[in-house]
Length: 273
Image (cartoon, rainbow, N blue to C red; front, top):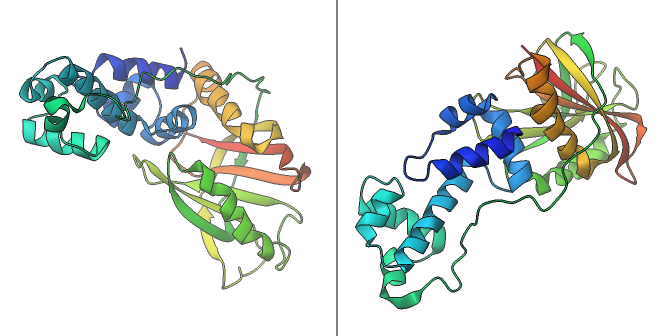
């Protein structure tokens, strides 16, 4: 069972006593960030948002079947009917009393147990291992929620006019640097290049710390990188005996990548402890 599938199973077993993100990540064997990223890529929601939506959806069904608001609240793991009512309104746009008054489930955006509709399997090429010293990437960035991956291409669109306007240590090579605070469910995505001298003043910079990396090769369209990432964290990492570090991940693009077709070879640099 992969990490995302195991997390879904655990969430479904704990509607009445919800697990924290820390407890869930411990049971799955990934950091909170890596679990959140992998989960959101597979499911479309971060794990805690999915867990909340699922237990409130189950509570809505129970209310429709005749359970009282108080019993539904405690059954969903809330400390009071008031807290439950606030969460219910935030999720569905109406209070549980409206459902009890005869509104029923029709039109309610319930979240059902996730069943993957897409085949996420892929052939993973064995990685090479690299140790690299600290370096700087200059570019443009944005912060994203785990479920906002569709906004990433816009970062590249903003950086594109700057590429080639300053000397770089690796001509023709560009990076994405994916950074996060420990335990956070948000991440910073920076598109840029390693400047050969002082970085341009109109660009942001991120200092990538020295690290040992497992370097994976993704071949194909960039939209399928998430399949490669799933294979890394679901299959390779548990079997490798390695542990991913809470350091920035890198995507490295060179002449093997066709920017017009958004397809080709991308190197995924996963930092290790």
